[in-house]
Length: 161
Image (tube, rainbow, N blue to C red; front, side, top):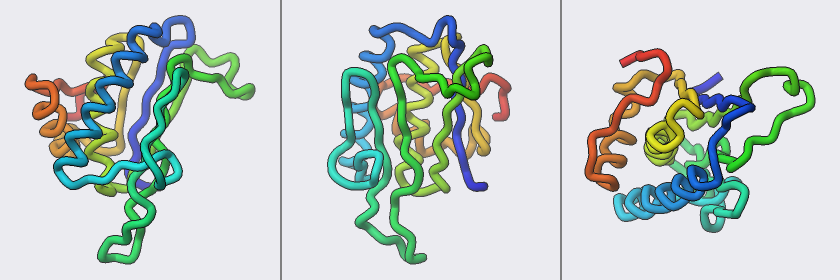
């Protein structure tokens, strides 16, 4: 398995274009601060620049940098869609489902800060959970608070603080 974050969005109310645009702009602010702090963020493949498009944005860690244990700093792509696509085999489910396994790699700080912001912007249009607890999100909370100047609120549907 691995350390993973999850989100679900109701099919009948997965958010608005305004919400997506706001989150994309705020994700850019989070990435900018993280990079100032020394965490390099790349596109979904772990190379180049983060990808921001009209319909989605995607990020990952840096695949070109190897940590002390011999693993690169990228893992799974964090991918957020303005309007979530629905896999054919999930077409009858009431919610869309997505996840990002970060394996505690350095870009996890950005993923968790973006998910905190997503809950703040999307409210009931998103449900967020994690293999970790609120304490595991400490670095993401601190990044969020530096960027937005407000206390980060736990985004989990079921409080595991």
